[in-house]
Image (cartoon, rainbow, N blue to C red; front, side, top):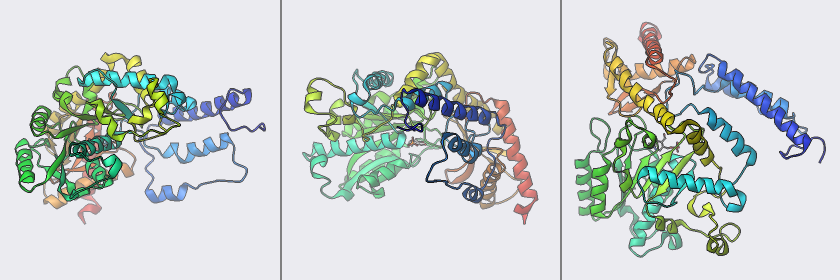
Length: 491
Ligand SMILES: Cc1ncc(COP(=O)(O)O)c(C=O)c1O
């Protein structure tokens, strides 16, 4: 290899290049972290114009490539750690998660076979065992780390589908889908994540297989409507493949009544998948763990660590109550998980994953739990839930603001109420408030709908944010609304 060896290895030249590249990048990150702005405020068109690829025959070299990434990517990135960055379930990350990423990336282990990730495989399995304990499942290792909630929900739905067919003596894995597929239904609430629809379409069953159950005033699944819709489905000769309950809906943070849903499903022999992508963080909570009662009765569970567990993207998990269901997706590839390996008890995690090559994201959770300890982890999770309750009280006391729904997890749904204007006008005003705040780079507030009302959303995950910070944000909402009302928006 020439002096210009681009590969990471133990050679003196490679180690020096690695050190330089990491130092240059981490110094740039430190400078970026110190920027006071949440976002530089560039528009889509401005960024499209500004960002140009520069692939030359000879290459620019590491230093120049990093400098260009700093200029064109880093400087115009959103500061997710900023107190005014509250639009989405998009968390600031733990420092220890950054350190874990250094180890994950440099070692580049792949979780599809033990011989590509020896210690990593064992750590992931032990974490899955630990997570199962937290959920209240029996001892075991039926579970796997995933790229996030969408993939975990896909696994839950896919195994529910295949278990449903298996009960009728049919193997989807071998023979594919069969029969009148239009009769197969999945139930979830109107507020469940859209990945339920997307995944059902991906699985060949279409959006129309999803029956949306009404929600109550707090966006939770309405049990009476669930029962009524199940009865209607039965009367029409439809078959219920699964019920998806949500623990922490994306906007309201609503938690479906798990105990009642799982009890009903057990009576009817229906698979329950719980999407706890957000609310699963309460597994660590001291104050709010009881919100998850009933989770242990679910057939499968989605957890997401890149939400209120504060891990970098991506980091999720899928847990399966009964390990035997993993047989429904088992595939043996001689080069990865041969009979020989399996007889020897070699844990090749590819058998449990939709992915083949897979990152060692479990390391982040392991290091996070070890570094913070359960108490501090619980505190930073609980902080968002408690802060949201305080913010809701503050919002309710402001004459120009309206609390749209009482918070349940760490989000606050609210809207600006002008003195006059019909509902379309108020909806447009709130939409514009969100857009303008982002365009100026001053805040990223979510714009969404709750019960048909266009409203603003603050997702208050960040444990370094306090009520005073949120008051500043709400003052900018008010100022922006007034500017809009007084200026071009009037005309
Ligand atoms: C309730 C819920 N489930 C699933 C998802 C999808 O998770 P991911 O973005 O990790 O795929 C989200 C994303 O916000 C969510 O809010």
